Length: 266
Image (cartoon, rainbow, N blue to C red; front, side, top):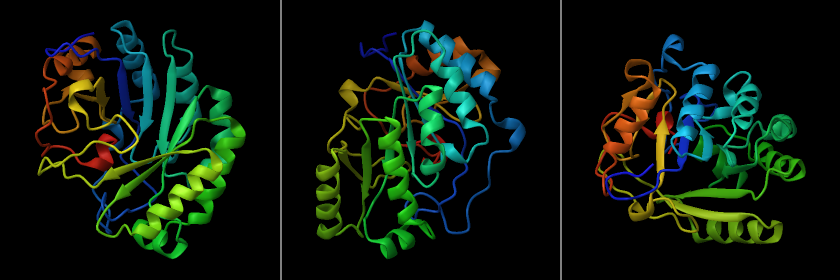
């Protein structure tokens, strides 16, 4: 499935929920936000149908994101449903890791291949401040559970902000090197201002090779993180929504004044 710029679209990111158990300062205000009404959120069956159609059009890589995907009830069922779709070669998840100790084994058994875990510091007090109440110890236990469950290679995502210190970077580098994890640094971005940067240690933010589209929890297929366009699968039908989004995929991102990071999956 080629877009207007001959990029082969093979990657679908699915935001399974806009809800999250943390309130990271660069993602969500302390008081929280107005959630998508329950009736507007796609069912797991609908998400599986989107995956089946997308695979038929050439997609082979799926990533589950949020919000925080592990706060959605029965997420193991969705993983199993997607893993059973013939043609899905890579099924992964981005998570804050808080609930991984509980769910890692059953996610692996359901067919999840690997995880990316958001972790901005190894200082427990600073982690709690940055996430507004998160427990770093739970994340570390979750990372260990993911490793033991075989959800590898494990990638650690660190968002670099004005609060990121050389000590944060050095301790994360040492931690990942000792454990064989892949560390990626993501500079803080702004959807509304259109400020985005290549991911250090990853392929994100490189528009000339971008091969992804996104599905929001309420069913909008988004051509680009930094685009206001979105085509709802309930309104247009799945295949048409996907093809319209691919047709609107820009050469490079501009800005997005419709969505936010917590409901589009980053």
